[in-house]
Length: 221
Image (tube, rainbow, N blue to C red; front, top):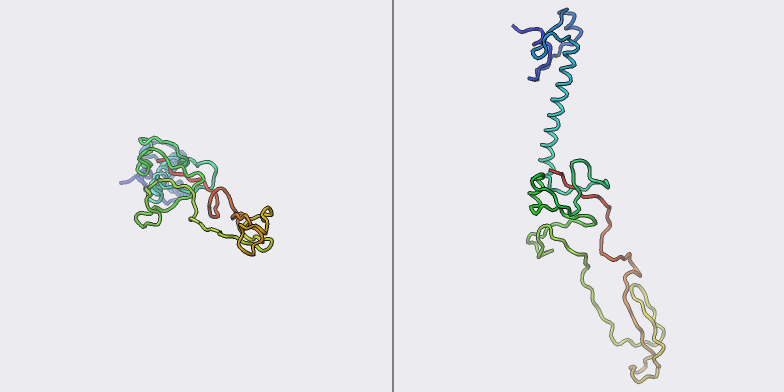
């Protein structure tokens, strides 16, 4: 035979009573008892259950959240964060050393115990034998570069003032006499020519694509 308390109070085993509290009071008309708090008034018993159940649910939610994080986002995977500081439970990818015993999951990806410094850097897919970016190893850094450009201008002979356009700059050399025997027949002068891409395109001290700045972080685990 079960007691009123066993039928109407939620115990840690998770069995939930669906009978409303007022109906239970009207049907029984006495103060029930629970296994863990005998003689406690019914409202106090429900408060006791409420706090106990909230604690249990919170703990379960935390466990599920940690499990989900470990499955979906490994601790060693860099995450683009739209904040200037790392949120709680995360570390900046700023080249700092970390405790491998304290963060064993991070140590799986960074066995040297040092986080990659991704401040101001782009992440590039490892070549892995494709020979597009050969000679690289995982976590190796690479300086900025552009494809090799070369050309030449030989034997310039002008019959008037040169007109420079686009990436070319130049100056007409008026110190050379047009009658000079050093010039090919019919020549009138020489020009100094230089190349500057800033004349026609945005230029800087590095080569880069359009971008948006994020803070890279990893989970502290």
